[in-house]
Image (cartoon, rainbow, N blue to C red; front, top):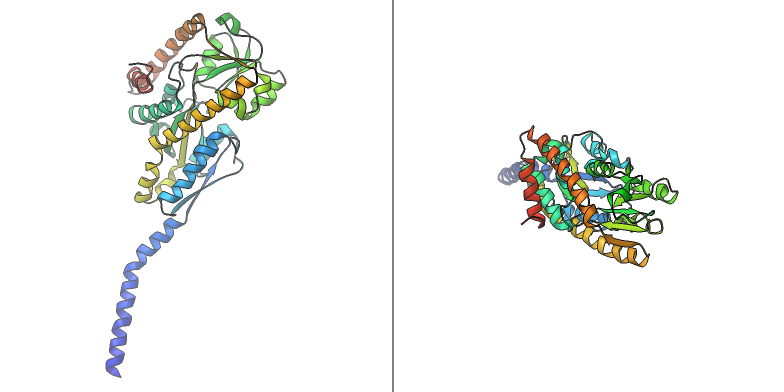
Amino acid sequence: MDFLNTKVARRTLLGMATAAMLAPTAFATAAYAETKLVLSSWLPPRHPIVVNAIKPWAKEVKKVTDGRVSVRVLAKPAGAPPAHFDMAADGVVDITYGLHSFTKDNRFQRSRIGQFSFLGDDAVSGSKAFWDVYENDLDAQAEHKGTKVLGLFVHGPGVFHNNVRKLNTPADIEGLKVRVPGGYIADLASDLGASPLFMPSGEVYETLSRGIIDGVTFTYEALTAFKLLDHVKYSMRVPGGIYNTTWFLVMNEGKWDGISAEDQAAIMAISGDAFAERVGKAWNGADEKAIERINKAGIEIYDASPEMVAAIKEKAAAYETEWAKAVAEDGFDGTAALTKFRKSTGVEK
């Protein structure tokens, strides 16, 4: 009996030792399994970017981390669109996306590189160029304090839509009240003679339908996404876009730091350049479908006249020079960055 008890005791001790050795691993796995993140989404739930980029990315996060990290996309936003960056930085929610130009201060000065005129007509190459140049050449992370930058992207070429007249010369723009998303296009529209009014996308329908504004700077897809087809008559197309908007996808820094290095690497593999391509394809497809509906609605899409393009180029060049000087004060070569951007999108050879 003593012999048997000794064998049992040894087995018991061995089992306890093995369990003790495995406990940290089991605990760590359990801890990472508890990483449940919340993403605040302010675009309409059926918006092509939400359906074809944001939600698929969120779903893939769970897949690539073997379920250790999950992302829940809220059905309704946790705050106003302009507040979304600060919401992530302050930990109100874990992940947000939004426009850099919605933030009225100058904290995202270097992001303006993706907002200029004549940057390209393709949202995939534009988004990939923006991620590459802003992240690697202009230190995007430093401008997104309190967060981890997961994605940077742009939409398709910006278009000047209005319901008053065809814009054949710069003089035709004068006096038009035009919604802008802030940033570069607000300055450009003002210089061209328009009266720019900043407002989030969701407020455009009411102001345009009631005649408070005469037009809007938007992509093609935005006319359909925000139900504006009955309130626009003319859409002026500029080669490479009269402007663009730059966007971020960020996670609260503390939340990011709480994720294992293995899972961080897995998440970044589907973010960054990969997310730029995903969201760019979503925007290209949305623009293509929107153009069909715009044509059916009888809205006239026309190319900007040589005189108009020349006027835009003159104004744009001045803003690019001013921006390059500003970022040079922080040690960045804005001129070289712009050249690299345009080569990436095929605008410059």
